[in-house]
Each structure stands twice: as structure tokens, then as C-alpha cells.
Image 1 (cartoon, rainbow, N blue to C red):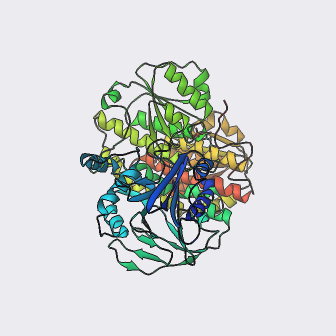
Image 2: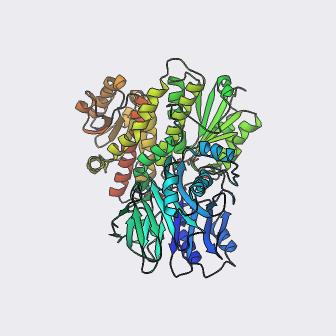
Image 3: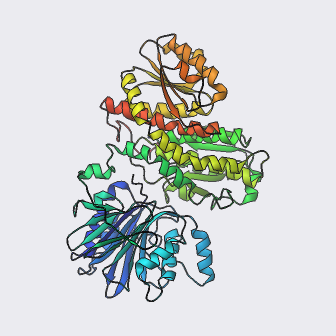
Length: 613
Ligand code: M6R
């Protein structure tokens, strides 16, 4: 499964390498980026050209570049550390401009490494973790050491999930790449070789590829490709032939971006934790307010739209249940015109995938005018909300292309959870076992994978409910919030009316809508309310409705009552089990939409980013 934040390309061979890698970047344009750059051999040196913004900006800057260069690497950045500027764009040099490097992923210990290098006199041009890694490679690249050996040694000093691609002034005609949980695919040509982060960038040149495996390192020259293990030993090449068309390749082999993004969630959960848990099992959040600020905050207002609003509701659940910190959640559009009562000691948190949603931005500006502290939880680095908030925590979910948001929600809830734990930690809140929560959080990527493995059962259930004229989404506690998100996904892409509410509210009105054929999907992951949820299920069944329950693998009650049962792995904290249950809800929406023949990635009447109020 490919999960890439940034686009990577590289070429060595007889063609004009700058043209080839620029063409490769164009083939990765569909996935989004905020800046781009190229490094190539030029008169015995390595030239680097990079620009913030569209690829056309880089294209203009490359206009007068030499046409006889046969080694180049290129990168389109989707920022995670440092704003999208010319300086932060890749490639980056080491301290001596001997090597140039591009990178995908996150170097978790870059701040410690940076301090170590600064103490030795290193100067940095950018705010990126990438430049720190390039300097580490430069340090290891002593005279007589081959580039692949320097990279191999440097990788041992880096922590995180990343892929690195490096070229050197000393060794013409060689590209070195290493994979550490971020994908690299090598394209095999005749008298030329290429690499890329994503298969579409290889397809015009070759269909014979080697997918670099975990921890392995590749050395590309025009003559051939070597693959080495962590100890520098040569390995046999495992070649595959790709027969996907370009559209299929862009979606990583999935039929839709939405499905690809749903399947990226284990990696996204891992990525949202990357660099945020230190060796002592403490939460480490960079660039948030100083510790004393957290003791002053008397109230939190979470402000967002759509899916981000549903993630914010999960935040409220945790802030109140765990921290006992009063928290309100507002739709951005209502907040803006609602003349909200704001305590001067309150914190306003803005949750947004795009960072450009007009209502959320307007609400942010209102808070700033009222001098309230503002914090963004945003996916797109350099977006308006990220820039205008006093502080921003990035969700690190990678580009989300499907209009129906999936992985961004999971990443937003993960960041809200980390934030709650961080507040508990700095305030030394009594009775909260942060280490215990972290242990559970670390298990989530694996548990999310287990949920994805139940997809065939989910498809079976979808076949049974595909014709429902109305679908209820119900739950109690945190399940009531995930129910809202399940309903939003369902209406967005299945075009079927939904009715969503806390399960206990059914008998106060919505129950009147239940007739034979109607389907009710219950989130029932909390054993504490299982009996009550079962009563609500019976109310639906007694009126001819069909009940689907999402419960846990340790459930002893709910599965006996429901018509169809789906399970997610139990977590010690019911909140985390509820979070995992969003995955079956997303897959139900996806598969019902698919069976009904609906447009999935671009549903009617909707846009990915709503930049009008
Ligand atoms: O970019 P944002 O997170 O600010 O966007 C908010 C909503 O527009 C967005 O979540 C929308 O509801 C999605 N289409 C839901 O799938």
C-alpha cells in the first residue's frame, strides 16, 4: 500500500534528465503539492532549482537550464515541517553542497539532530527535517566512502518513516535511494533507470518495476540497479510488471481515491503519532503554547464544518470526560453570526482539512478580533487557517483527494486525542494515565488494519441494505458522534436520505419514520450502554426496520439482537473503539454507493474545499 505525502522522481540515463524528472513531476500533479524542485549535475557540481507554488513556476525557472544533464532528482512537496516557501522546498544540500537530497515522510528526531549539528557549527537554510537529514548524510560522506554507504550509515541515525533519494557531486551517474516505511518504486529501462514515489510517474518510461522493500537501499546507474539490505549486502532484484492504466495507477490500484484513502488510515494513524511520543512515553507537541498557558485556559471552543465538525465533537467528548474542561463545539457558519460569548481565558480551536474553508476562516478572524487565543488543527501546511492561527498542529494525513473526507477525520481525532493527553500531562491532571493511553494509541494502526480486513463482510451487509429508502445512524456517547460522520458519508455519496441522532432520542420523534425496509445502523462499541442500545434496536425491529450493529470483538450482548453484525477490535478506552468504528461506517457508505452506481470521488453538488461563505 503506497502512502505518500510528497512526490519523488529520479532519472539517470542518456536523455535530458531535467526534462524527464520534470515530466515525472507533472504526472504526479493530481495528488497535490505546494512547491517543487529539481537537483541535477551541472559542470561537476549539483545545481538545485526550487520554487513555491505551481509546477509552472518551477518550469519557468528551469527555462535556461543545460539540456545535456543525465542525472537528476525532483520533488513535489506536500509540506509537513515549515511553510511552503522556496527555501523549504526540496532538494536540500548537505553542509558542503556535496550531496543533494529529496525526502518523503517525517524524520522524527530532527530537532535533536539539528541541535547536535548546530553545536558543531552547521548552518541551516530551511526549517525542514529534510535539510537536517541531508546534513547527516554529508557528515557520513567522508572521503573514500561511497554514497550508498554514507546513506546507509546516516539512516541509522534517523528515526521515523521516510524515503530518501540522494545524488552526489563526487559520484556522477549514481542515484541512491532508501526506503524506511515510505514507498519508492524503481523503473527499469534500457541504458537508463528511474525511480518515483508513485507508479504513474514511471508508466511512460517503463512497466518493469522493483518495489523497494522495507529498510532496503537502491543504487541506480544507467547500467543497472543494485538493491542492498540494511547491512549493505547485495540482494537479488525482484521485478514486477505493472499493467495498470494511468488512472488506476494514480489511485494506487484502487477503484476510487476514497477507497485508497480509507485504506491509508493505518498509516495515517501511525503518521499522526510520528515524532509526537518521546522515549519516555510522553506526548511531545511542537510549536504549541507555552506550558503555563494551558493552566490558564478555562474553556475550549471547537469550531469547524462538516466532517471536521464531527471530529471536533469527538474532541469535546475527550476534553470533557478526560480533562473535565468545559468545551463547546460550533459550526463555523453559526459561530460567525451567533455573537458567541467568549471568555478571555478561553481557547478557540479551528479544525480543517484544507485550511481554506471560508466559514472557518471567518470564525477564526472573529476570534482574533476578540483577542482570543487560537489554535489550528489543519492538514494543509501553508493554508490560510494554518497561517492565521496563533499556533497550528498539523494532522499529517497526506493529500486527501476524494471529496468525501475519510483519513482527514481520523487524523483530526488523533491530534485532538494527543492534545488532550498533552494538556493532561502539562497540567499534571490527577488520575489520567497518559502512558496507558499512549500504549493503546500505539496499537491503533494494527487494529485499524484488522478492521480493514473485515471489508468482505461489510460488502455482504451492503448488498442487503443497498435499497433502503432511509438509513438511520445511531449510537450513544462517542458512538453518537461517529454516527453523525457515518450519516454524512452515506448521504454525500449514496444520495440516500439519512436520519442521525443519539439512539436514546429515537423515541422522542424520529421513530415515527421507521417502516419496513428502513435500515438503522447502530454504533454499539461501549459495553456500558450496550443494554440500552439493544432496547433501541428492538424498537426499530418491532416496526419492521433492519438493524446493523457495529460492536466490538469482545461484545457479549449486542450481537444477539442485531440482524447484521460488524466488529472492530476492542480498546481499553471506549473512545478509541468508537474512533475505529468510523472505518466500517466509511466502507458502508463507499460500498453502498458503488453498488448503487453513484459517482464516488466527486459527488454531485459538492466541492472538496468550500471557499465561499
Ligand atoms: O477542509 P475542511 O476540513 O475545513 O472542510 C470541511 C468540510 O467542508 C468537509 O469536511 C466536508 O464536510 C466533506 N466533504 C465531508 O466529507
